[in-house]
Length: 155
Ligand SMILES: [Zn+2]
Image 1 (cartoon, rainbow, N blue to C red):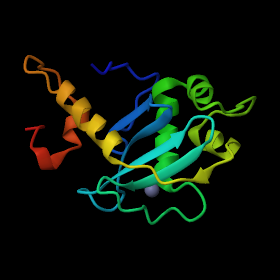
Image 2 (image 1 turned 120 degrees about the vertical axis):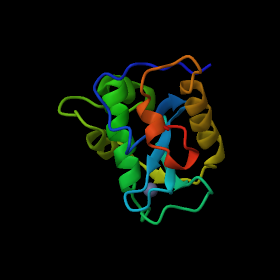
Image 3 (image 1 turned 45 degrees about the vertical axis):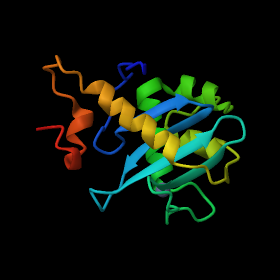
Image 4 (image 1 turned 180 degrees about the horizontal axis):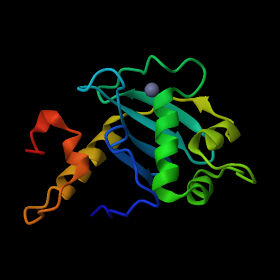
């Protein structure tokens, strides 16, 4: 069972519907800025700071050009909102120090390198996360589901 932790600060769920610190990585799902149907699976490994970004069909992200793409930056920003900068820095083993307040700051402190990792595991965790949110007796609006127009779950 995945725990749903209330975010430290409100998050932009439409942009990054899923973010977690799990499996030794900061990982999550980032929606495409241009195509509503497309999502990217982005991750950064704790310790090694190896990063990857691809579509959920394992097509490499076109934004990876020797540096983390905008999806990874969005993911890091949202992780900081969700967990707080200290917790994210600790988990990824980043020497945050003073003056680090955002996800971009954290990424800038990492000695990142690109290393492909399969998107399927993260994406299936995201789908399970959605299924978990879709509780039958829930009457509250679930912003995560509104993001996913293709499923019709928000209707
Ligand atoms: Zn990307």
